[in-house]
Length: 419
Image (tube, rainbow, N blue to C red; front, side, top):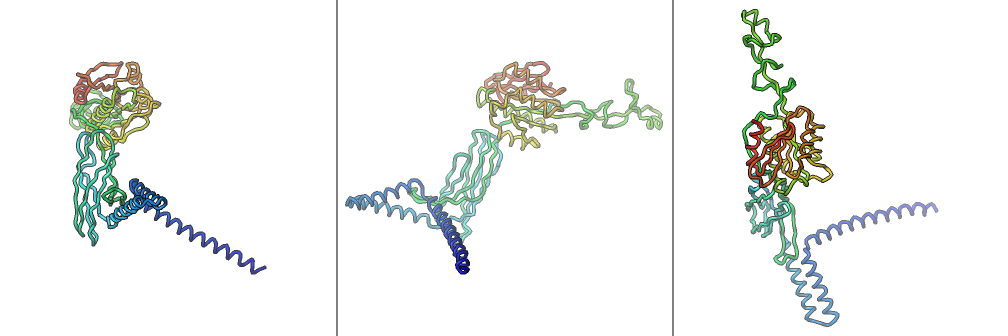
């Protein structure tokens, strides 16, 4: 009985070991089968099915012609499969001259392939995915150490972020029954920035603030000391510098640099119901980008917000990259009035708020949006309306409302507001 008790565990261990071995072998076989199946294209499966069906039908019914057709198809399949034999171990390098372009420009790049092996690589195709499309290049036979370079240009018709790559080296047969693909290199993001326009610096966005930064303008009353001046009638006696007065015999007063707070906030509404067309929405994105770039060049702190999130605006490049990814928001996220309320809640110390929206916004909604800006901030609303001949300016309460129909109208319109 003791011997039987000892043998039973050993038998169970052996059975468990055999099951593990079978499982490992089975998984490797399945992996090999998946690799084999991955190189067969739909046309290849169809031809192989026809070959088997024709041969079986011909043999069962005695139709030699049908059986011969099946054998011919089988031979064609075998010949096509031979085209997969060979190496495709290229060293692939994808180089975009610029990873950031303005919509409408062409992104130029180069695809370099090098054979670092000791054997030649037979002709193959290189596939370069570009967004939802792809480009194909035919590469001839490459001798050991040889290189091949293909230049390409990517047209950009709309704003966005386009993923270029990863590059795939494809080996296949002329009939397209089989195709073996190997991925090379990593994908590269191509940022297609919105169009922007340049205009001169303005004073909009600056408010006097004791906690602000010193400016170039001088003042008789502030906290950032600049120099000593001779007393003039009307100067505040609290700013007399008595030590200098005693030393020189002339009454001297302190002069200060103005300290200013400049927090420029842009609210770009992405609600689809506020825009008459996609072109109007693209114009709104361009307007927001142009105003933001101007404020950044004036060394102002800039924040840009759309429905649901805040955009990265540390530099002009970050701002345009963020605007490249802006899309229409969901209907439940609200319109420009709700966005203005969010700005007031998250950025209460803003010195100026620029609201950008479409012509689908009613006057009541626009008035509500302008009334919700942070207390003490200057409000400017830019309404885009494609096809408008001349920019229009009016006021809603304390806010200036500018209506533009093209990007080149923005500098003229803002000049009237900021004068």
